Image (cartoon, rainbow, N blue to C red; front, side):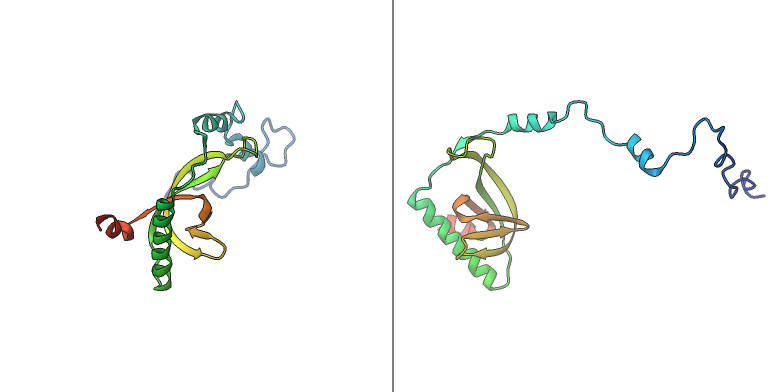
Amino acid sequence: MTNKYEDILNMEYPLKSSDKIKHPPMSIADRAKIFAPFAALKGHEEAIIAKQKIVVPRKNLSEESKEVLDRRLGQIEQSLSQGKHPMITVVYFQKDTTESKEKEEGEYLRFTGMVGKYDPLLRTIQIVDKKLKLDDIYGIEGEEFCIEKIL
């Protein structure tokens, strides 16, 4: 014998068919319920996140800012046509869905990723798996635009 429990390792569970079992074997679904996470206050975490969100009115871009964005989008389009997918950081406006639909209020978010697609006709840009409307973009930063800052 190499293991002291070798004689019982491959034995059938003896009490499976007995009705006198104090604790019958549990199904896998019932066993999974034991280890499921428990939230005593449902929605509590969402409420905390909602409180941390700062809702501000939408800002209108100046003509100069719009020109800078257009130049940067042109550089992105040129990179994509050359088979390059630049890494950029975008600051964009996301409308708050909890506020009234008449107000243009929401929050400005920052997202970094690799540009997948740019469609000037539909006025959208796709960064990784996030598709953004160009009208919602407030700023674009990236390594490709560092030359512009120096000049």
